Image (cartoon, rainbow, N blue to C red):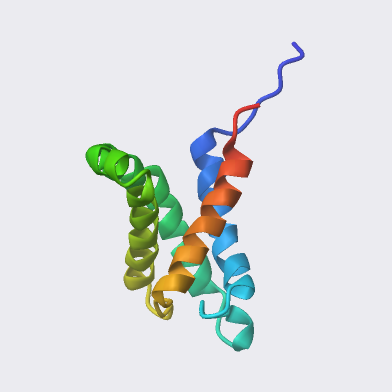
Length: 121
C-alpha cells in the first residue's frame, strides 16, 4: 500500500550514461564539446551505446579480468571503462574519440555519476 515503484537499476544506469556524456563533454577539456556548433544527437547516441555497454559488456569484462584486477589493485577496471568509451566513440559517426587522459577523466566522472544515481537506498 505505501510501497513506491522505482525504475530498475539498469534503466537508471542507461539514462544516466545518456545524459552524462553531453554533460562531461562540457566539463572536460579535450572531449569534443557539442556547444561548438555540432549537433547533440551524436553525443546522446554515444551515451546510449556507453549505457548499453555498461549494462551488458562491463560486468562480463570485469569478471573475465578479475584476476588481473587483483594484481593491479583495480586499475584494470578503469582500463575497461576507458576502452568502453573508445568503443562507443568508434561506433557512432560524428563523435571523435578523445585523447587518453581526457577519456580517463571522462570514465572516472561518468562512473562517479552512475555510482551516485544507481546506489541502493
